[in-house]
Image (cartoon, rainbow, N blue to C red; front, side):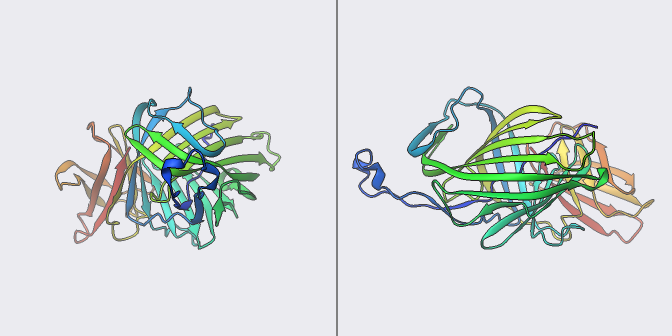
Length: 341
């Protein structure tokens, strides 16, 4: 069986300092205050983040030191990704207080407090598997330039009796100016994360399966990284490189009810819905854009698991709302926020 392993990053928040006398910055750069990671990323429930994906294959990434300039204004752009922040009441994740929902349906279950942020599990719709983590501390506070912290954690995939151990190293490698297409950010901290996960189950189906390096830039204003570049080398899937930078942040009202149990996503012209439906009941589905326009309707019979609808629509990236009505039970309605990246 082929598995797609994912890494989780990004829960850092910066306190920004500025250097006095900017006209003599180069002569006295060593006297300038440095950005400091002061607390956890405050991803607010209901917020949506849009990222632009690009190709960084031929660009220098790991520039260490003070007052560095990263010039990525010439990066090629090849798409967009949308990420939504929801509350988390998913069964089995009682300690998680938020869920990061990605456009492809991936769900990251997260718990956070004033000093630490933990990833408790990741659901991968590509494999249908949930990977569970024990004491995976992805962010500590405070965090500054040249600070390093180490962590180890347990990982397992219950459906395959798989277990492993992971090791994490996080370092504040440099700070300076980040130049992106259409944006220039000053006093930005570059955080480097290195992860290795090793099989400890003894199963011949698994080997040392994941080595990843991630670079994340923060400016202390935006909750999400301004730029994220990931290099993942898996014994099963080979080496992949991905990059994305923050384009927009939108505060959107969270759908009432239980968004952790009722959720959906849109891939190409296919709509995926998972909701607590009654087996054998007849339902109607209505898909709306944010202007309230109905763009797709369907009638179907409720079954357990995830439902797939072939819409035949070439929808642009964005946020959509789905309404599901049980037509045989007094019109009870379920509302779901969907994202297409």
